[in-house]
Image (cartoon, rainbow, N blue to C red; front, side):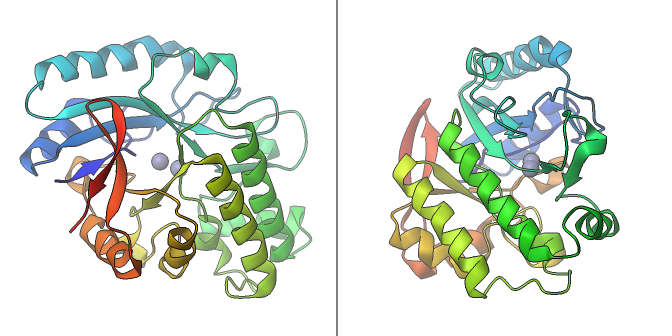
Length: 281
Ligand SMILES: [Zn+2]
Ligand SMILES: [Zn+2]
């Protein structure tokens, strides 16, 4: 049975109410569904929720959990940015919230202090902005950006405070359009595999993010890397990272089939609020 633990709704940049997503998930026969709004940052953006909205967010998920009990398991999570050693999933604010799980993700690489949106290189936005940022802040050397991205990811994993690492190599979405990028080159693979070794040591779950399967033919991590995850016994889960209710399981079947091809027979998911290995196909 299907599930999804990475999703957005109107509390951040998702395009509909939480209940609309639940209705689609129930209609598609989902076993479980988790909300993971973009967590508050120390500055406001157009896509993060605010600290002030947190009580209402948690209360609404609790209301839906009761209303849909017996039909679907619902979970409250957050997708939490690592910005630097002062702002990440392991700070008391996030650790004391009554959440079922936490996703640790990188969207921003700060290029100078203080922590403010103008001081961030966004790796997940439009390509034009990305290109200007690599030109301006990495001297046009995409290898330096890749190094910064995976080293920052490693610091996020070291500091911890989360269960699942989100879209672990999303750097290739925009990066692969920039001259000099090559995810099969030794310099790229070395950084990436060192991060995987650390993730295996910390026993984190890696999500296979299917948000761009239909639009760009991409999963994060890249399909060519699944064998490296399997070799390291890293547990995986398949998430749609949906922002629209009709996309709750977009790309899921494709990703499950690819994982099966490299040897995976289970995915790690919350079942009755405990992490379990659930059989696939
Ligand atoms: Zn994300
Ligand atoms: Zn997301």
